[in-house]
Image (cartoon, rainbow over the protein chains, first blue to last red):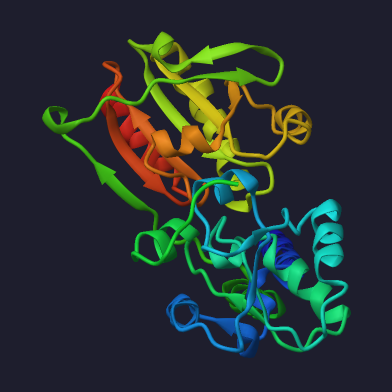
Length: 156
Length: 168
């Protein structure tokens, strides 16, 4: 009887963790549809062969990280996990045509842990933007961009 | 039976729902090849500036983190435990917050019962340490002020503990 009760409690704890994890993951980058992602190598090709479809690139993470290294030509907006970051993002894009090609990126943390790209993507989707891509950074900006030798700019 | 089924279901759901901990990148140096840890003096949220070189003679675990960084939040309770366990044997953990402002750091410090000093880092601090372009990044520094190891990404407490014990 005691064993059955313990098993029941254990199972409940496991389920609770699983439900919490699902809820947590829903607000994370891993829930962005694959069709809206762009790989670093594909973005590099785009940057290096500018044409009519030049994207507006927006960094939605930390300013301290942006100052150390960012994609040349990209703009710093602020962490989209904060209300002020989302407001800044909305303000920056509100006057743009809804078909504008926009690339969002962060790279603060491993993809599944990034708190910024999902809220930023959600905000642009809710504003009606139809051509948004999110840069898929699996580990962090240093490992998946800078260490690969892709173009980097420093400073504000 | 029901419990076993629930356990199995929970395990499957958790497997796909929980972002997997990436294997951290680590570089460990033997005594002959260790580089000196760059010195810095940085402000604490509620205290005087902290200078790294004033901890010479201690084993220092330097943790670059931020309040909004999930893996950092997972690691910090383990760092608090390590400080408690090995502090009197010569371990000193120092947190370098890479937050853009000091405001979220103060309540975080209280909430997580942090028992080691935290300073506010800058882009320059990150560059001193080869670029902190992702969090967390942790350096373990020996008693002579030289870098023993660098861990990129969340790291198991057991790994830190093993390295700390080898340096104490």
